[in-house]
Length: 584
Image 1 (cartoon, helix red, strand yellow):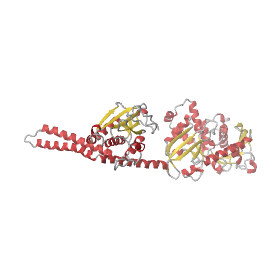
Image 2 (tube, one colour):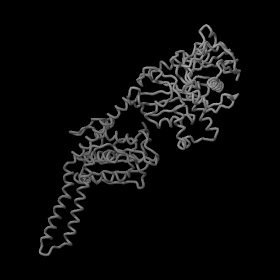
Image 3 (tube, rainbow, N blue to C red):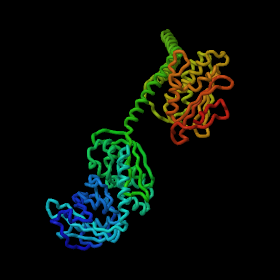
Image 4 (cartoon, one colour):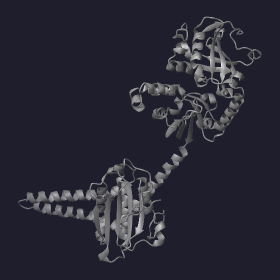
């Protein structure tokens, strides 16, 4: 490093007349003071010894106080100075000369020399014969102010005009986007990732679990350097300076997102998308969709684009819709129970009558001159059994009638069907309907809400029972069947021997408030469809060639790994009495 005398006008920036074609920077090194003082300023050739982490820390701590027009032109900085001031120099200084700048700042800050310190660099990008000159302010009140001038010649002067035009187009594009945009410099994290890869680290998830401090470090050194107006509106900010700096404020409400974004960056993916909550500057809590685009070679590697879409209103609307659906589902269950009032009363009356009869008989045995305690014991056991049966009946009714939040658990689907058959046993017997089941054994478990799935099955069975009122008594049959299809989905089908579905009603059968039943609400089958779709499945209806109707639905099992969104499930199978939804 060569020390030379240079007129600095008392440690202040040169006048405009003296500037000419020289780029001037004014830095504040307050945040870097401790780091600068810990370095040995006497060591020559420091740029050959810089540890990348240490250099990143230094240049991220040094803040820009001011630049002149030539610096904006020569370095391709944003024309709006507000987008430059108070930013860390690490986000704007060219990669090739970062070590030279770190060396210069260290020497100037530690030197007692009142003149200047200069360093010549052969070529930096489109600049050649680059000379960096630094000095610090003489005024004690500006002890942490350092000035740096840059003299250079362009090896392609015409490229400046093209570069400026390109940068202007880029700035205009970002500014005019109708969604909030943050421009981020993630290069410091990228350099850390490069060193980790060089050291053989390939599983970043495991490494970050063992070294959680790297997540915090990445969050600290990755910097926001610009935002558009939409971002300012979303976060309730008044000045761009509020947004400039570490990205920590973007992830403070959803800290787990920091690690997920870091893993995406490390893995080299082009884009990362996730939902998260953010806290705005004016205290609002928002649900947003985060979209990040990481640069690839050939693009501006200093710029990672982060966008947010405010989903708060949509999610609130969806929550209200779910509540309405839950209310309708509850109403549909109550409607079904209302249609079964007589059967339910008879079902409860049977165990109660048994309790009364056994209790009266027990009293007679106890009132004898010689009480028969053995008989009393038997009768009392029968009372207990009948009471348990009555309790089970009431419990099933309460489950169907209750208003509750949906819960997702692992279920034995065949067991769900058996419980429905027991629940409807008296209703079917009273109407002279025989229910036959053919349930495939060893079905994989399904994940879902037991009461909701029971509601679907009960609704379909009750509809079939009611559809056979006009059928000859000897032909009132319902067939329930389960099987596993080739896609590892459970398929449930129900067939009856009723009058079938009018052809002109088939396309409307699952529409809300469509009903052909006198006094019906028209929400039963619509709710069934909603429940099955919420479980990742599809439901369909058709007429049997030999008469009667058939309904069927399929839902995912644990054998598929996880529930999927409602999607195409295949064509109607070769066996027409098995219903599988058509391709949509």
